[in-house]
Length: 43
Image (cartoon, rainbow, N blue to C red):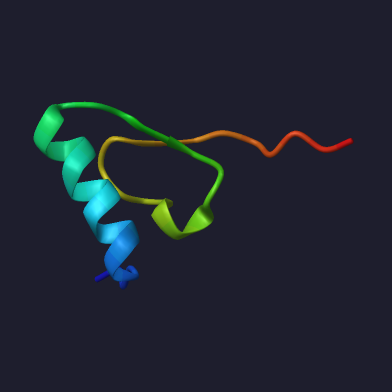
């Protein structure tokens, strides 16, 4: 089971409810359904 902060859980639940993919570079979301991790752009 994954443990998310309340704000992260709300973001994830909203994306799921809307049928949207969640694009993020935040590894806290790794492994969740509908999440697409994108690399951070470094300079």
